[in-house]
Image (cartoon, rainbow, N blue to C red; front, side, top):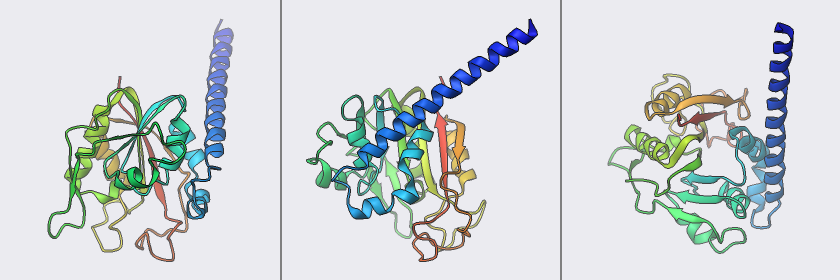
Length: 253
């Protein structure tokens, strides 16, 4: 009996693993197809090898029929992948700091169903503060499957980070995923001019858990052994090759 039970468990485990692997391969292939779009510039494609979008989105468990929110899309590097990817079967929302995406991408192929939300979010820097404050009521989205933000966590002061985390938590459905990537700082290192755009991953985990999330996984996709965590991320010795933490959180059921 024990042998039969063990065999059944192994069979189920292998089946789940194979299904997960198939899902990862499927979304990775779809991402790679979207990456061939003509709206992506040479500057965009030059960063593919470093940012590994297909592998990163597969790790987070993205599917093209999800309702997803990208926080602070900036110039739209990831938006150029995510909006067309989600167009036919899913929903893509860009939230907070969306002026560039709205101005430059809204009329491009694959962006006709993009939604801009949280346009009333207030971003500002207090005098003498190098980090941004953030104030918003909500993202204007509910029951999202995933909220993603790439290399933005470092831009905010503590209250701004908590506002962002709380807004993501409120927007997600139970079981929804919060996907966060940022440049790595040494644990408990004091603020310096060189680490202003770096974040201690332990601090990020504690803060995001404080908002109600549970940490479910991390990836070493963006681990860079030769980044000594000593220089500003724009310095020649590390630019385009910074060590980044890649953390996957879940809103509990």
